[in-house]
Amino acid sequence: MLDNRPEAPEAFVARLDAAARHMETPCGDGRMVWRMWGHGEPLVLLHGGSGSWRHWARNIGPLAERRLVICPDLPGLGESAMPHPAEDPGPVAAEVRAGIDLLLGDRPFDLCGFSFGALLSGHVAAQAGPMLRSVTLVGAGALGPKRQVTELVKVRSAVGEARIAAHRHNLAALMFAEPRNIDGLALAIQEWNSQHARFQSRGFAGSTSLRDAIAKARVPVALLYGERDAIAWPELELRFEALRAVQPEAWTGVIPGAGHWVAYEAAAAFNAMLLDMLERRLGV
Image (cartoon, rainbow, N blue to C red; front, side, top):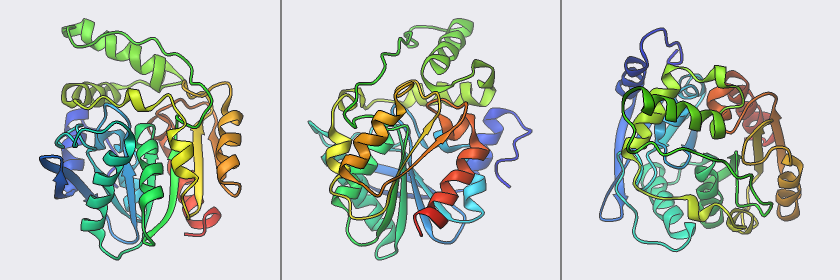
């Protein structure tokens, strides 16, 4: 099981990477990098802003026991090239959708996106053809209600222990409900992601872009938050109401005690809820 991780963080990530099948599709003037694990029905996971496939490090192994798990580095993040210039998420999502089409062809798939990945997932769902079976949004913004202001500290010029402290502060402020849950792997992922992030997604987050896009989806929709998600707490229900206004049959879920990066902080509960939504509640 790939999530059994007694080794050092770098070794665990390297083992996950070595177990993946690597693919590339066009992106901007370069390539988008994709990784695949497991077999079965495809499940595409889109990571968060300033992130990479590593955001799913604690989910890939358990999910790949049941599904073909597919994780890209989104345009301008991780190892993927910058997208073509865009004023809104639609064109960026189109590059992601085109990549999925090239990889899967006429194979049905489910889509799950976290944070910025949730925003792109909504736009992919608005553009997608009949092969998309469901879309699950995790820690989503851009549904209408204003998000909480999160004070982060600059990391770029920090070095050594000060840099680690800055990462720990930012993870506690935005990503985790409980600072004690920030471990060495989370810090290593945050550092790698920070070094490789070039695309600035924040300008897309404070709008109704996701709500407007997901209104066009013609597949089952689900929305999931950690109970103490910094961008939504304490008004999670407002976001559920905003989604149901455009998708009345949407399924919603909350994982107690977890923060924005719920897939990491409460990985076992997240993995179980996602599979439950896909296999029982969403009927796929």
